Image 1 (cartoon, rainbow, N blue to C red):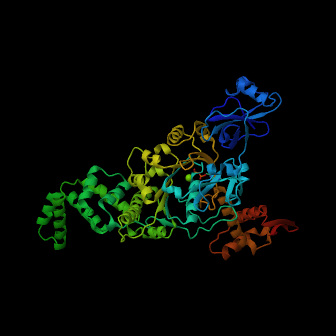
Image 2: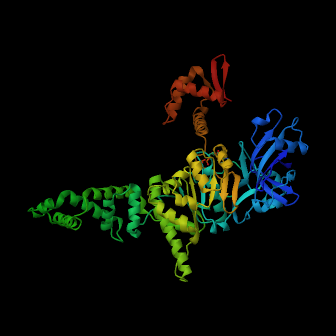
Length: 611
Ligand SMILES: Nc1ncnc2c1ncn2[C@@H]1O[C@H](COP(=O)(O)OP(=O)(O)O)[C@@H](O)[C@H]1O
Ligand SMILES: [Mg+2]
C-alpha cells in the first residue's frame, strides 16, 4: 500500500495490488518527514487494463500512472485498487508520494474511534469497516453485542460505537433521521434498551404502539427488561388532573383536539377559573350554550310565565345571569369549546393523573406513553411541561440554596414522528415545550431523542439543537439537503445516503468531530408487531387444524362410506360445532396433506387413520 500521484496536505490517493479498499476505513500513512498520519477512505476505485485511462476517473491522469509504474505496479497486467483518503488533520506539508500506508493498530486510532467506556456510554452499534483494527483491540471491548447481516445474527467483530453519557451535559440531544424502513425504530429501540440498562429515567411517546420490550429477538443472551419499563395508556392508566390545570394548559389541551379560533381562546380565558373541576367548568360551558341559544328575550319570557316550577325558575335565573355576564361571547365559540371538551372527556383523560409516570421516572425506569396520535399530542404537551417544570423548579431551587424542593431526577424524552410534535412553519401545542427543552434542557439535565422521517418538516430551531444526528437511508432530495446543512456530512457521504442498507447510518456528532459510519446493533427485544403477517396466518391455521384434530381423534379410523354418521356424531357431541359431510372430507384431506393422519385403502374402501 502506497501513496500515489499528486498529494495535498489534506487528501491523498493510495494504491494496493492485494487489498481492496472500503469506504470509511481508517488508513495510517507513514510519511517519512511528518510521522504517522491517519486518514479515512472517502472514495474507492479499481483499475485494470480493460479500462482505458481516458474513461476512468479524472484523477487517473498520466502522472498517477507514472507514479504507479515507478512504485513497481505493473498496470498492464494486474488489477490495482485505489482509494481517495481524507486526512483527519491537515498536515503542514503535502504527504510524500510513495509513502507506505497500512491499516492502523487499535491503539494508534483508539482516540479517534472510542470516546467513552462501555460502562458510561450507550453502546449503539459497530463502526463500519474496522474489523482488522478491532483485532488488536482490548478484550473487554470485543464482541459486546450482535449484528444482523444478510439474515444472520453474529457477534460483532468491529470496534463498538459508544455515545458517552457524560458528554450529554455538553451535547445533550439526539436526532434520528431516515426514510421509512431505514432502521429508525430499531435505532430508537437500541437507545431505549441502553438507557434501561443504565437505569436512566426516560419517557417515550409511542404513537405506533411498538415500544414493548418483553418479546426477545432471536439472539441467545439478553438482559431482562421486564422491571426496567412500564407502559401507560392515556385515558386508562394516566391522564390529566383537571383541577391542577392553568388556563394555558387548558388552551393547549383543547387546541390539540382541533385548533381554537381567537374568539374561542378568549372565551376560554374568560370562562375558566383557576381551580375549576371538570364538572364545574363543563357545566358552566353547557349552561352558557343553552342560555345563548335561548337568548335574553326568551329567558325573560320564561321567567315571567305564571305557574312555572321554582326549580325551573331557578335554572332560568341562572341562565339569565350567564347571558348577562358573558353577553359578548358568541354562541359558536361556546359550542366549539363544548365539543372539544367532550371529546377530551370521553377519551378518559380527565379520570387519571401523571403520578404513575412520576413514580416510574423516580425509580429510573422507562415510561412508554401510548395513545392515538391526536391524544398523544394533547397529552405530550401537558406531561412534558409538568415534568420539565418539576425538574426545573428543583434545579433552580437547588441553585438558590433552597432545600424544600422535592427531588426530581434528570430525564430523557424520546419520540418518533417528531415532526408532528414540533412542526416547522405552523404551530402545534407541543412545539413550545419541545423547543424549550431543545434550547434549555441541557442546563437542567433534560435530554431529547427525536426521530423523524422528514427532517425538512421538523422545526429548524429544534433540528439545530440536536447535536448528535444519526442519519439512516434518506432518499428525498430536500431531506438530504436539510441534513447536509445541519451536519458535517460530506457530499460523498450524502451521495451514499439513498443506498444505505437498513440499519446502517452516518453519525454526525461534535463529540467525535467527524461523521462516522456505523451499523446499529441488533436489538435484544423486538416490536410486538414485527411478526410477518403470513407467518401469523399459517400459525393460526395450524392451530385451528389442531383443534379439529382433537374433535375427530376419537372417531378414527373413519371410513369414507361412513362420513355422514361421523359428521353427525361430531356435531351432536360438541354443542358449538356443526359439521357437514363435505367440510369433514376437506378437513380430513387437509390433515392427510399436513401428515397429521393418513389415508389407506382396504377391501371396504378408503379410510383415514392415525398417522
Ligand atoms: N440495526 C439493524 N440491524 C438489522 N436489521 C435492521 C436494523 N435496523 C433495521 N433493520 C431492518 O429494517 C427493517 C425496518 O427497520 P425499522 O427500524 O422498522 O425502520 P423505520 O422505523 O425507519 O421505518 C427492520 O424490520 C429490520 O428488518
Ligand atoms: Mg418506524
